[in-house]
Image (cartoon, rainbow, N blue to C red; front, side):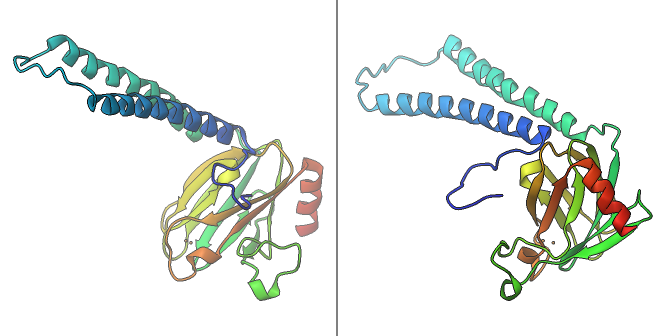
Length: 227
Ligand code: CUA
């Protein structure tokens, strides 16, 4: 979860988010190198007094500054494509969770286990206790096992919503009449917070998501208590 003065990405809690962070840092490094080079060249132009009135063309430099940026772009495009396909890969999930966006709450279904279903509303500020996070905690959390592949199916009942958990690298739109799929793998226990990220109406900011990541035997216990 993000806390005060955390302006960058959250710590990753899944292998895919780790890859996303690596790609972000890689792209940022290239961006910094280009900015420094162009900044240096622009700064140096102020001191250049050799104006060549008869210079009309320069085939070689034109070739260089056309091909070089193209090669640099490849260094961003290829890892980006790799990530895109990696995020789409489904690796034999052991649990499937269905989440349905409503105005303005999420509802969840565990279709593998006798179709357990429940609604998940944000806890209003005036009902919050000392441990709760304002605008982020919900009355019914999603409980999921850590160290297992989870498939998530996202849809919506009214308007477009988006099921987004930054620490897990998950962001899937819930669209009425469609069923979107993604998957993730949580590699540590804890609480993972997310929010809706499609502007879905007046209370868009007030439909958070909380995942409670627990060891598998705890998850089995939780499931059997709710069957
Ligand atoms: Cu649902 Cu924004």
